[in-house]
Length: 397
Image (cartoon, rainbow, N blue to C red; front, side):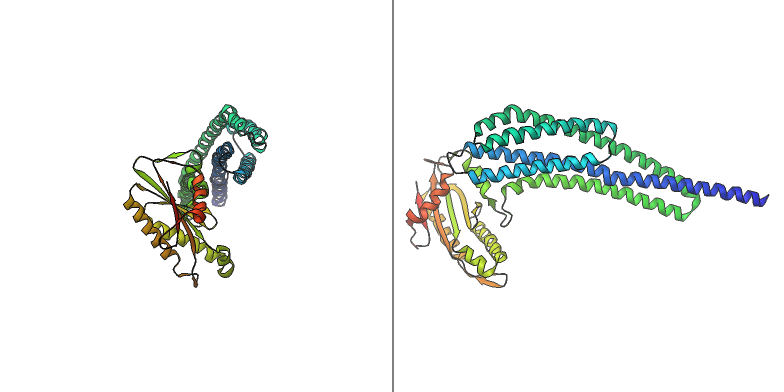
């Protein structure tokens, strides 16, 4: 009898253990699915939205550059941005392929079909219409297509993608809630099996917290990515100064009027024989010299904006009051900058001494500023008035 009872007891215990193990495996599987698939699917959708917005930014820039091509030769920039647009379209396609491969609920699958159709139409407009018109030089036509067709299609696709994100979030929450519910059942179930089973449940709790942390980190990463987009577009990655594109946007998209009793001082700094510095000391040292140049210019011209407008060329813009005393003060700062920049510097254990060509153009409220200011700075190096020290040249209204 006892033997029979023990057998029954053992069978029951074994059945409980097997049942618990099966349920434990299911919970682990659902948790893993939330971490690996659900978070990945949401990330693919968010990245697609980001890429689309990056592409639209470059598209607007390309069209505006083309429409302003009568003021400056923007051919190289247009080709560069057209290539970036193609690249972003390819990235979006790859991300959607990855999302398509992930197992989805029926609601997600239904909404994804709408997104896929919208994405194909979006790609059709960008590739076969907008880029085709840009390639043929029909920038006004491209501008019309952008506002008449592209914006509506983009808004619709944004709406469909956001709906899909919401459905995906609901799916993640439902799966997460189910997993949490099963965890609670498992905790109750394994109480009778002692410390070992409690340890396993604690591991599940740790995994739950890891999921929450991963979700929070994913959201934080996406927010930081969005925040850094502007820096990626408008900042030079070597010197952290504003880049040439930022200069073009500021002074090349439309004429800038100078307020009454104000003056803009544009000071160009061009490193002489910079290619030889790279050859002699290495590009890493050259990069440090570029960064040091921006740092020194910013320290001297406090409150100015420094742009890297070429590989070895920088423009500082100082906005101040219009007076002779101000011109004298700026002139003294230029002399100070020349002295500091041409002094011996220790970079990467090398003593590097660089020379600079410097020009200054003063603009007052009687005139306006556009991208021709860059050519005026170049011209001042040869046709401008020489400073008293002979170290720099200038021209003024």
